[in-house]
Image (cartoon, rainbow over all chains, first blue to last red; front, side, top):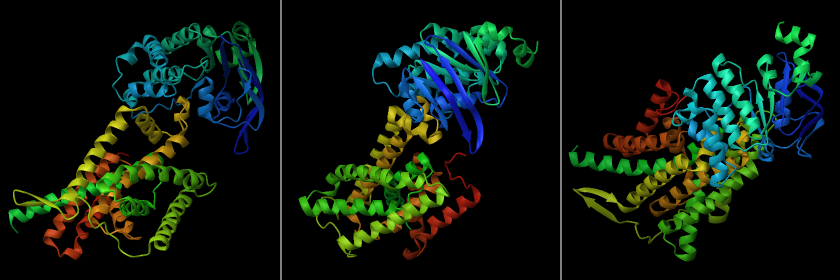
Length: 234
Length: 292
């Protein structure tokens, strides 16, 4: 479904991603792990069109999408939830959701994902009229994921959804990610909390200083001695 | 000073204030949306006034009826200015802020020059409009019909703006772009499209103001200067980029101006307005209704 080949991205001369190659098949949950500064976020930003790669190719559903403007990447069916969420914090929860379905005019295209979002995260349904900035960190993450779902994506990309969130809500969010996949949306997720992430993921890649150093099924990565030592503290 | 005179001056100030608010609305909208100050705003107003004048001369359309057509034409003009000038100024690789200032300032100079070339510097006016010269009298207070109509147009326009911003997809997209123009792509919105539509809407608003002002104000190439100065004060007072702050600030400016005229010689009527502006800048630099 998604293939990034030999992708390199630099910020003002500083190389953040070096010839990274990853693939995501339809229906999978793929986890990208790695320490801070390993290039995980850069990988997602580049796929989302927020950064331009200096070399390499991104293909989605058989078509090249590298170099497309970010709003066109969204239109193609990739929803991206960035690390800092970038909610419209002065607008209400409801307005944030409605903005998610900006691309759709039909009622069913708007109502179906909305019902799903509220089923996944009932506390959003209770807070529809609150400003987004008044939500807790976990609720904001839920809203960011819901806003992304409103665009009816084929692929959902999450950058560190557990960051700055209390543990109980982290579980809720990972459960929701499983359900989202079960409903037919493919998921590419970047995480530092590897244990939880590998529980729901099918496959994983490990990035180190901008390079893919390891890839395999979730079980292979979990059992790898180097990974256990470096990321799982075992 | 009689109670009659005070009431008269309050009412006149309120009517003019509503018109000032309408003149400033587009400036506030564009500034709020993308942090660009349109230094050609006064020339946009001038263009709209000439457009109303032209429609009157060519097809004897009363400026009040011409207002929607002027607004529609100005919408297109505003979008074209964004797409043809501002868009490129914003992507300047160095010092984009200064480039934007000089781009819109230069555009204003060009527009004024073109107006002098095409229409001569002569003062024009629309001689026989429906409302021109008419007044109404309520309880001894005179209401000039053109100003009254302008105030009503302003109220209706701000009401419509409120509905657009709060009840439509486009309005939500405007608000979202205003808050974080980099994030709207996450929901598939092309911010450049919103910018172009925002410029169009801003220009359409000043188009309405121009058509109304054409009823009772002289039309000449420099006419925008005095109004745009008041518009900048209004936008700063209201809180930069807040459309409804500009609404309240416009009314305040009108009232202060009328109040100053009551106690000061007529030639000093703007002193109160600028004194208020200085005071607000010193005490509350974000404007009366601005948020940081």
